[in-house]
Length: 150
Image (cartoon, rainbow, N blue to C red; front, top):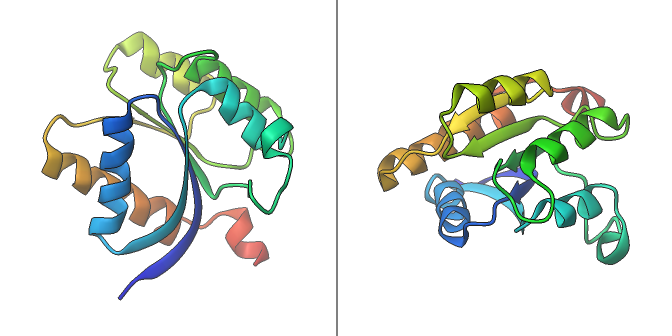
């Protein structure tokens, strides 16, 4: 049985990692509308519905944001800080999904109000399991203001 869970914005410059996220959701029959962007500037344009992303029908607000820290054009920490400073966006859970285990990166992300910080596993099966678990938690088990209003 496939469950529909809504929109996820994946901001990831590594195409292999983006494909693993896609496969992870598909492998566990989580039907999500995954929007993938490869840099921080495009992510901000999408979220603020500017330029190529001005149409809200083709650029819907995500239920969650999966955000890498190491991004071209605008880094992930700046994207996170901008999201959390914007009243129209700050309620959207932002999950940092990165390769960095550096204590300073973790601290900076939480100081900027990240909702979660996950380190990408190296093994395919572990990566797929992580995607399943985060999908279950943030899209099924967690109660958000958006779910309550629906």
